Length: 277
Image (cartoon, rainbow, N blue to C red; front, side, top):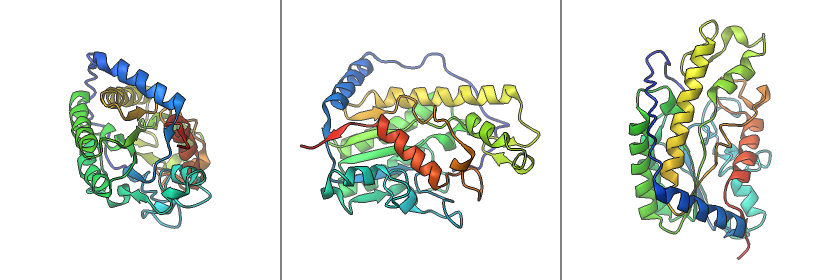
C-alpha cells in the first residue's frame, strides 16, 4: 500500500472540481436512504488496498483478511461484516475480501475495475471501497484520478445495479505521521509514504500533502455522488483521530488490530443505516 516518494509529486490541484448538479440530488437521496434504513445485505465484498487486506496486523506483513475492518471475522476487530452478522444471520459466510487478491502489490484507483469484476462475479449486495492512498504520492492529477475512479465505478454499478456501495475517504497521512513522530523512540527510524522520513519533513511538505489528499477526496465524493446507490463517508476516515497503538509495530504504515477496530467503527457510523426488512 505504501512505497512511493513525495519528491516528484504533481501538486496541480484543480480548482475546477466538477460539482455537477445531479450530485446534490443524489446526495439528498442517499441521506434519505440512510435515515429510512436499507435492508441488511446478504453478502459483502471489500475492495481496497493493503489496509483492507489487513497486512501487518499479526506476526508478519502478509495479508490477514480475518482482521479486515470490512469483511474480517476476528471478534477483536468487530468488522462491518460482523456487525451485520449480529443482526442478519443470512450474511454468514458471504464475506469476500477482494483486496487480498488485488492485481498489483500497491493498488490504486485504477485497480478498481479489476476488483469490481470479482464483486460482480459473486453478485454481492454490499461493497465497501477504500482506494486512493497509493495514488497520493503518484503523479496523477485530480482529473486523471477522477477518470480512473469513475471508470471503475461505472463497471461496478453496471454489473451490480442493485448493490449498495460505500466509499471511504483517504486517510490524512500527515496526521498519521504526526502521531508517530511525537514518540521520540520512533522518530529516528520513522519512514512513511510520500517521503515522510526522519529529518526530511517540513511544515510546508505536510501542508502540501494534506492539500493533495483533500483534492483526491473531493474527487471520490464527486464520482460517488453521480451514482444513486453510492455513499461517500463525508471525510470520516480523513478526519480520524489516530493513536500510536493504531499502527502496526512491524512497519508503522499499516494498521494494528486496534487500528482495524477503529476503522471498522468509524466507517460503520458513516455507511448506510441498515435495518431489518
